[in-house]
Length: 102
Picture 1 (spheres, helix red, strand yellow):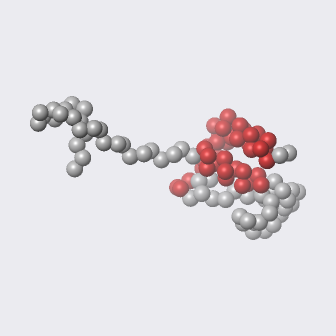
Picture 2 (cartoon, helix red, strand yellow):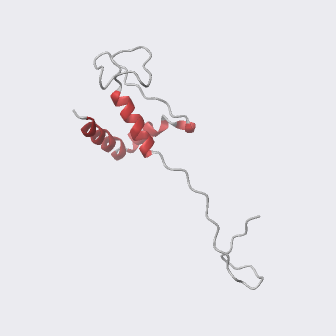
Picture 3 (cartoon, helix red, strand yellow):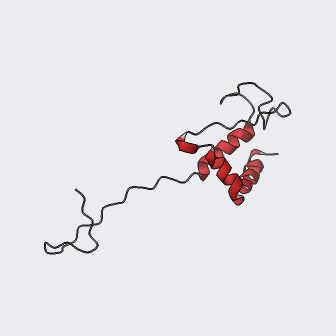
């Protein structure tokens, strides 16, 4: 199976199921983005091939790396700071929709 086909399948699976999406996003709880490792001796491409301490840069664990990528693409972006409203001419009085920054 090609990487793009697997990406599409896993992305749809995790985005359509709220429980799975919540579980995936929970692996980045508190801003700490943990590596996900598919630990199995049965597969050295999608899994880690049973390597005891797989780390990024090692071969294999393509599914774990794919899940990390999808998690990163699915995390909500931080809200930007509000932009100040343009200055208005209110003849010295406070305009009702005016925001003051100190």
